[in-house]
Length: 215
Length: 110
Image (cartoon, rainbow over all chains, first blue to last red; front, top):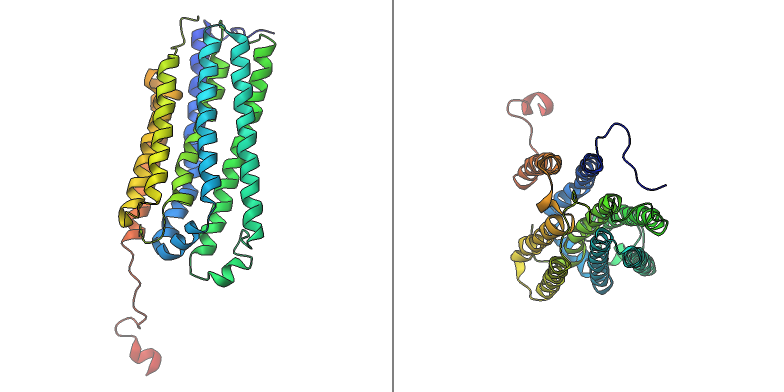
């Protein structure tokens, strides 16, 4: 059934605004949710600048950087998908949302590859593995445990975003949302962009800031 | 086209994306530039600019109503208060000397 104004709203505009506000309140709580882990990272990096530097140099920089590109492109495609839906170009919009979901899957695939590479090198969460015997600097265990926690939690969010976009894609195809009510896709896209923003901060913290840079 | 939704032009979307990719490239290039102690603030500064671009254009925050901005502002304000208090603690910590408190040595080791 096509998107309709429910009885407690005067018109679609007010309904869309309420939905948008709800999403933003949720996103603010998500930011606070992730910030606990960012705070842990800050504390441990301050206490063990050397160990964190050593660990960063052993991370999979190339794959992580490719993943940054993948997410940035996916944010662009979904934003363009919203733009096309508002113009009433249903098919182009559906295609762009499909591409976004595909890019999300690529991201998760690359991430899985990275985890497997770490396992091969003896880096497991919780400071278990042969890697720490060679690199016993205090902080390396904390770095990689935080790495697994934060990228893992982020990956869960990517998967959730793919489910949300999949549901919206189905709605576009069935013409339940469109030019007359494009806001469900716009709101879903906002969630996807938040997932991108979180990665924008994870990437420098876990891949880019090398040793020698204290704090 | 619906009247109530602000539409961001395809042109703005493209240039925002281009800026994001260039900033990511700059961030990656600086990884190898060995700028020492500056790498932390510079990398996070670039990340902050990228996040701002995504929020303002892709997430359409620049065109949102005040109520929506307020919701985010509440989260960000709370975040900055808690993070700054925490950082103020962590950065000013000194390891206390392992000594007996004054006046107690006699009693414990006497």
